[in-house]
Length: 262
Image (cartoon, rainbow, N blue to C red; front, side, top):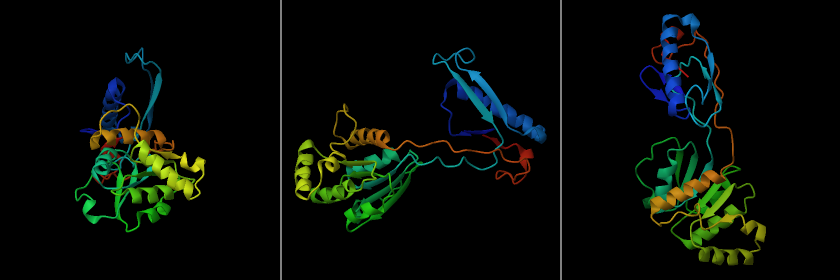
């Protein structure tokens, strides 16, 4: 979490812990500004129950250190998604995922289907117009998630078949009903797909128990399932203290300005 005198960036979970940590960080900023020689890392440990009155209990360690970049480093991507289809559900899903640190290759063969507006947030979103979307499946890195929701059932079948043949795919999802799945499975068995390959398909998609077929409702259910399916990986970047003589991007001076802390 980056704390400045006037605002903050990021979070350590909110609540009383974060409220107190921000106050401590700002007190340190004032001290470091008055005495740059003291601008070094400071650590503290807090018992969440006795000290902060939180019923969850436990102990947390906090570390405060000078930080002179304009922003925090970007979070590692939670997952890479190759999304096929820019229809109503596809657009609603991208709007939901835009706020997450992830990368999305959004593919469609119809130029008019891609929205002209930008989805602002933490996600890296690349729009791609591809004449043969099934061929684009090979472009995705290992461990990718694949989600197919195009305007054509025939196209859905070809793209999904290509994704299922990638043994390194972390998730292959297809929009549609159990009936659609059964028909596709019949085609794939005739093409020689094994049962173990077919069983890797998720269809219908979305976490169970959520009623409603509106695009926004479907998007929330699908996004939750993608988070369940994405490979676990570290989400916190390692940040080393910045030397006291380092230049500050805020004011152009050295650490003596005490502009920011992490």
